[in-house]
Image (cartoon, rainbow over all chains, first blue to last red; front, side):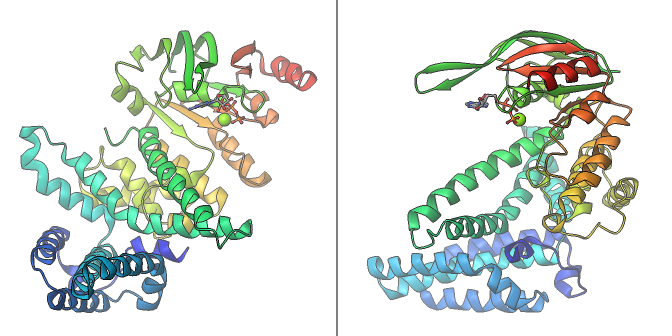
Length: 202
Length: 229
Ligand SMILES: Nc1ncnc2c1ncn2[C@@H]1O[C@H](COP(=O)(O)OP(=O)(O)OP(=O)(O)O)[C@@H](O)[C@H]1O
Ligand SMILES: [Mg+2]
């Protein structure tokens, strides 16, 4: 339930809310490139601090957002532990810092911008590419569904855990992972069907 | 009124030991405004319903809606045939109610402000005024199904296919959704286990074991099904 809030636009009047969706999108893309291009643990921590600051500035309810993200953070922590073991501390800090920073930046975008506005901005930005066969509406739809996928995947993880708990299997990783994967695949198929059902997306 | 034809359609699905036919050869011509599909679990009702907008492809034969071949003119058919699922959660893809309806309106309303205003009008038409900013995940089953239906009808389909749209609803809500469906000006094909709803349609098909076992007057077909359930 709480994870759903992650994808939800929270109306507000901060500068982040008032910026045009297109500007924020370009900002997100540029930031992603920079975060990935600049190497090293120190810069990763810097990006992370910046992302947290932006999220705080956006007025997102931090407690809720963090609670919604706990499974994502747990996954990041596991990834971090593995990287420590494989490549050592500096690399682990870089990988996890970059990843969480990007997720927080994407979250800031969804908190401050209605999906519909994001779709309009993407569609408008891609309109010149129509001549080379790109369908701007289709890409806009795919992009907004991708943003939506983050919170809904977290919800699915929570549901899978609930289902495992309901059968007294909460300690079995298998009883949690397999239903989770099945749910993610089923959700992707359902979303395709849902668009199909309304004649949109093609 | 629309015109739906199934011409010697079969549907088979691959299994580990060869193909299994889940719908035997079926030919139908549906012109009635309200058509119900009834029958036991696993009989092939959903398969038949999903054929009508290409969610399930015919293995052999042809499905034709208003002269359009579902396999070859899929895009046009999907714009014409709206589909309502049992579980609204499977149908609602945007975060809030207003945005979900607005998604359906993107093709007809380019301007964002106009689109959102139109979405609010659709919500009001469905008795969902005030729900615009609500998360689609926080709705009750009845509200969710109303919203799913609103989202489909906002695309202005000429046929509405609904697969057990009232199965998850309580008595009041299932009556409300049922009444709404039957009062639509469009052609409606509804899969249902609610035999009262089926009896109020213009034509009922009883599907059993992958075949249309009986087809005709609602009262007669429903009576037959009750006697041989
Ligand atoms: N993709 C598929 N792969 C394998 N078998 C399938 C597939 N889709 C349907 N079936 C099988 O085809 C049969 C008919 O399924 P269908 O969903 O059409 O039944 P139904 O009449 O809608 O049942 P219910 O009332 O339970 O919804 C069932 O035995 C089902 O298991
Ligand atoms: Mg079914």
